Image (cartoon, rainbow, N blue to C red; front, side):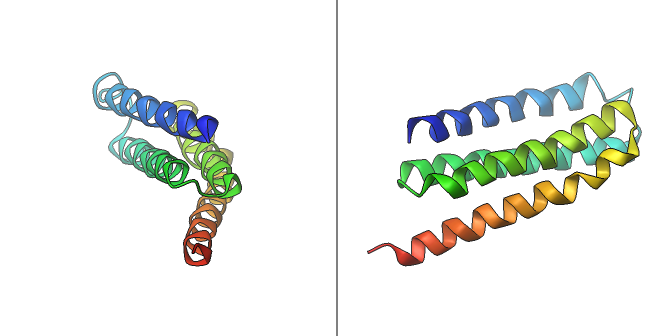
Length: 116
């Protein structure tokens, strides 16, 4: 469980860095709506990071943890790129990341119910 735990910590550190980058470096560059989108990406990245950490510490099955990581990359990553590039087609990827995040959380819940 070292790898999912390490990835969870990395995603959290990256989330803090990207949050600060958005709040300071992008504050004058992005429109208010895009800044809100950036903040949403950071928030969901942190949720995924904490979920990976908690799941790894509780020795959850690796599958839902990797789904959280994959969902984070698709969901938050597509929103970051959308904000930076303005490419609206990236918004079509975001729901796929959201589905992966939901699946990861549901699998974690199922695993918790199945534990002795």
